[in-house]
Length: 145
Image (cartoon, one colour):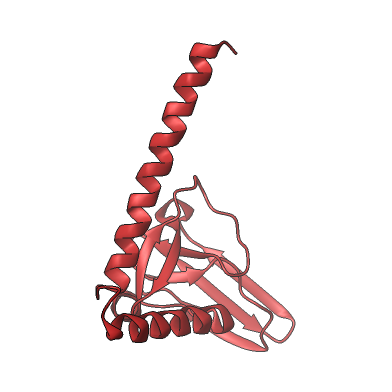
């Protein structure tokens, strides 16, 4: 690789970092719109982090209305998605978000509003089915304050 190509890649990398940083700043501002100097900012921050903690502990499937009320949805930007604990995917058809993988549960029976994503867990048996994987995108959820 010659030095011109290295410089070009460095410029592209810096531009991508600046773009993603601006995107994250906008999402955080949407989650907590109060100015830092306001005492409500701290209360909103605490409420948002408690919601994110609840999300990690419970791994719920959230439908669009509840999702909009509790979280800001930020596309993760990766191509495709890999199931892992703590990761979420959003169904583009109905707007619901679901965990990309669920912890072992004795009984769990849930699906997104359109039925594209379905979780079925009974005892040791666990089945996760996705009717149309192209409709799913990986997302990050930020708790609203």
